[in-house]
Length: 365
Figure 1 (cartoon, rainbow, N blue to C red):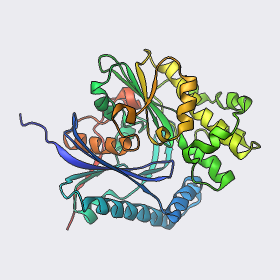
Figure 2 (cartoon, rainbow, N blue to C red):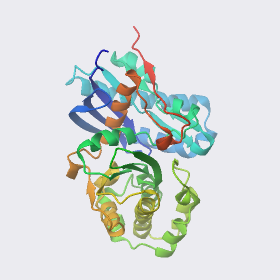
Figure 3 (spheres, rainbow, N blue to C red):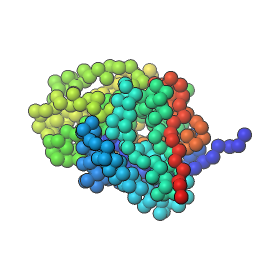
Figure 4 (tube, helix red, strand yellow):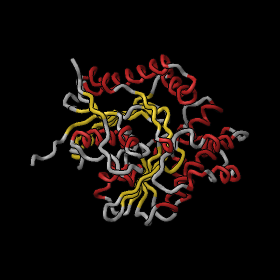
């Protein structure tokens, strides 16, 4: 049997927190990661940011031409970012393209995702793997979370059991047990909940460095009401979307900008803490926080106040890159797709069987 092949891969991730593209380079054979390259954070320009935000809120009212124009703009933005990176990394032989989720209703197995993988491959003259979630949904899965397999690869040298808390637009949990057993699920809201509040009431893209959240006061009554959301009591595997918690986020109305930011941040962290208490079978040795939430000192402070059973560490404190992990995960999954290895399992997404997900786009011309 021929050994499986290692690739130098560029992973591209465009999260629902709407802050921009995360791009990261790794060398992997889909099992082990042999080298971590650089990670790049490329913020959207204002027009693309507002276009995506509008599409998230008004998707049902948009006509096909509007949707196509925005998909083309998003794809061109990815092409420009990848082209700049590849000027210095000409040996990249594969791209893992996460695309951008606009509408995801996991309970109904519905997904609308934008980003043209074929156009990306043609423009960059590199093979692209994208649309990772489609096969999982066809197999009865919820299409998320997908990074759990990559978290397990990162945790090979970690003392187990260990938990990854991935705080992006939403928050997701990955549990890796002492013998490598794996459980993954969406835990609750993430940065998108905080971003939406400060955008609406402070005309800001995000709560930079958690400054509003730390100066505000948590409204404990509002938080208790928000924590009664039925999703939080649902057994894993489970996945959410940005609209899952919209009704509870309305409870923030009437609070000051700072108090609303503090209470939204507390909602994010309390949902994670409750998920670990309720759905993780063993007390972890540590909790590794990754994603954009790892860069928010207020999120980290609130997590450490709420979780006493295990130390809460950032990915950087464990030798990883918080912002790069999701993009790295798509790079890793792209190689697994080419090697015909599973990219999701019943215990990560609820699919009826293990799934080899991803569509391969060969460059034309």
